[in-house]
Length: 74
Image (tube, rainbow, N blue to C red; front, top):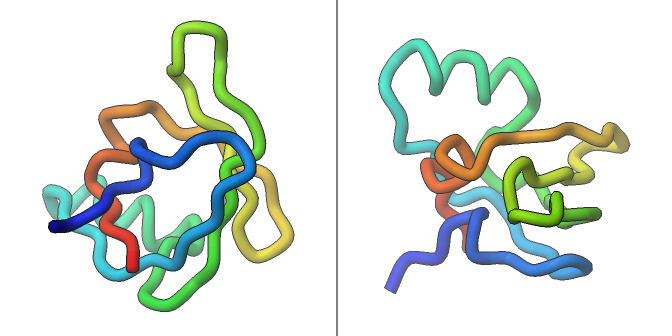
């Protein structure tokens, strides 16, 4: 069973396995640092769960839940 980034809760960590998105979104996510093997941690969720704030490579980024759903984790 594949786990995606939108399934993580605050404080949980994971590592990127793959980015499964259309070409434009995949390129943007990869430019943001979401590449294979990179560890990520969920820092904070908005009250309704969207957006998700994550820590990756020392940066804090916000992603929409639909975008996070495209990132598979190990």
